[in-house]
Length: 134
Image (tube, rainbow, N blue to C red; front, side, top):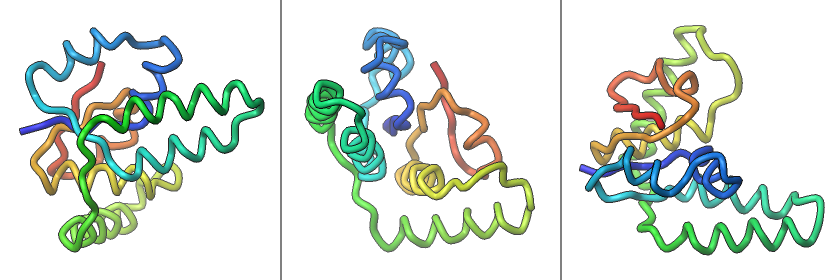
């Protein structure tokens, strides 16, 4: 078992909206993993920063986060992604573009991990996904 942490959680910790202790309480003794999708989203946020100070702050946060083990996206992840995306498309229930969310969910499902998020609505319609929140 393990926990894949959604990008929003990492951002909330960096902004002081969540404490590391709250994350530890939510994940328990389970190992915590990082997705390349999260790295991409956080790098995007750093590169789009409105000031050099915020840019450096976000890059420093990304460097700290990258100490966690990173899951790889592989063929199996791609197959799971395709199935989930097709299910969402045919259901007609999509509320916004969700590509990154579907990649995260695909990785969590592939590895049998729980996805820790504060945005439950983004994931609640994905079958087979175990969701936890803070």
